[in-house]
Length: 128
Image (cartoon, rainbow, N blue to C red):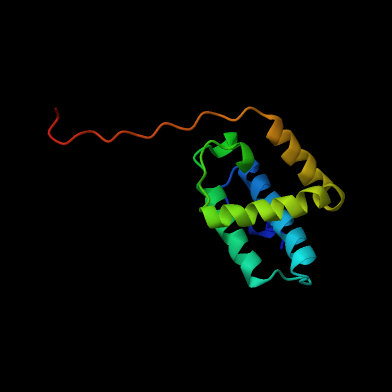
């Protein structure tokens, strides 16, 4: 389920790493909880597709904090619960299965979360 072969030219290295870490975590979760073989189940494929879209549209870009420390909650509440379940299950297992992803994710989590980006104000019609 690794998405390294689908490298998007729009994603920075930081966001690409976040996407690859998420893909690895969902893969660990699906194999362990849903007992899927090589291919993830449709529920996990949909969850990964949603997470990838959210990562691509992250307003923080290269300064993106881990989702747990993010001041903006861009996931729908129902999906946020699914992601929490994935991370709760896969997190400890990532140390053995994907140690580089686990270490980089831990290091990213130690960084200070940036302030939310300011919303761009639209000029008023009429010039007043």
